[in-house]
Amino acid sequence: MNAQLKAPTTEQDIKNIVDNQRQYFRTKSTLPVSFRLEQLKKLAALIKHHEDDLYEAIDKDFGKSKHHTQMTEILPLYHELREAIKHLEKWIKPRKVATNLLNQPGRSFIVPEPLGVTLVIGAWNFPYNLSLIPVVGSMMAGNTTILKPSELPIETSKIMAKLINENFDPRYLRVVEGAIPETTALLNQRYDKIFFTGSPQVGRIVNEAAAPHLTNVTLELGGKNPAIFTQDASLDVGVKRLIWSKFVNSGQLCLAPDYVLVHKSIKQKVLDKMVHEIKKHNYSVENKNFVRIIDKRNFDRVAALIDPSKVFYGGGTDREERVIQPTILHNVTLDDAVMQDEIFGPIIAVLEYDTLDEAFDIVQQQEKPLAAYLFSNDREIKNRFLSEIPFGSGAINDAVMQTSNSNLPFGGVGNSGMGSYHGKYSFECFSHFKSILEKSTFIESNLKYYGHSDKQIKWIRALG
Ligand code: NAD
Figure 1 (cartoon, protein in one colour):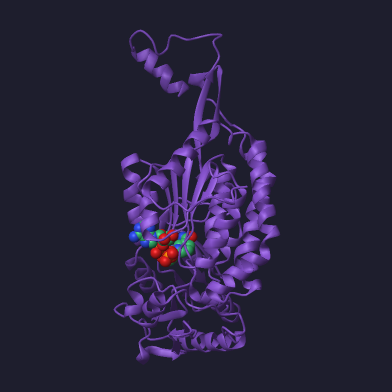
Figure 2 (figure 1 turned 90 degrees about the vertical axis):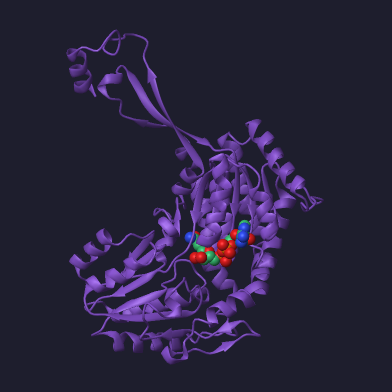
């Protein structure tokens, strides 16, 4: 127990935390699988024991209901912990691979090893999920970890700091709370891995801080995620899934569809069905099925994207309560404010297209998105979508749900990020894979020695 742990206040305090973790890592205490499992089980038990405190904290920050938090944060976290505890002994084993003839007699294998001291920086929109799931990855890979949760949901940051700092050895796992000054001080230190979730703008700052030490970096960023509806799409189920995935967490979700490209022949039908679905949900903060915008700065940013002349549905805002009604903008063009940056709020922009080429072209004019969604039943269009459009992850005839399958790596590409995690991919994300060739000393050919004749090269090529 470290109940008296003092919050770091100076650059030197932060340096001490990192130095202590490095020394501890060198003791090799984090290496045995028994240690890793024990720590993962301890984290799972701690969360279980304090689940109600976690619900209370997030409700204070966002007005987020228990069910909403269970579905989007706590259950995915338990799932990751269960997978880690169940499979770690298998994942940690050296992986055998074939050995080419040139290296016979011998055997080849890949040994996973921890990277060392890691820094995990979380985002605010799913504070438990986006902070603790990477931490599980770091723990199972055998690293020590410093977690810096987002400072915006202050109650969730406080509860994570309290639970972890009172129950774990700070040389192994430590939460450092704070905003830009504290994150900057953390980034001034040297790590073996930085895992960052947040905006592409801050992702660049993180990457620059990592560069002098060539620190391994994973960046989980955002972008403008398209959803394309083709003429033959199953509209009832498609729009139902689209609306849920757009307005869950009030659109404050990195994977949420940002804009919808609809074939002009079905545009009116899609718009009408969208309104129907929104009304069916009866979204409201009082019903606890619609969360507040995290702060006034984000409220102002999102509200400014609503062009009254383009509102098809919604558009209402309440700054005091930090609530923006679910809003559909139509007749949107690429020049509109709503198409300049990621929306990250409860607005959906609808653009129409005539030909599929035109729709694909619009997507490719933007940076590579974190996710893309296609609503279609046409095999050829599905194949084109998969082969022609680059994006981090996606779904066909659904949205967002790809993240709930931990067999699928979760991550972006280009401006939406680098690297991926979840399940086994989290273990890989926080590990290095050492490639080993072990040779027998029994025999040795002279092929590579003493000059290179045409005959030797011919043999080397043949045995490749
Ligand atoms: P953000 O980039 O503002 O903040 C993320 C973290 O960086 C926070 O912990 C914050 O304290 C820190 N930070 C902020 N400014 C900093 C600076 N100047 N120097 C150093 N550290 C700084 O992002 P956000 O507002 O928390 O989240 C919104 C963005 O995150 C969106 O772009 C969204 O798409 C993206 N996101 C991505 C994922 C994903 O998994 N790919 C998940 C959630 C959010």
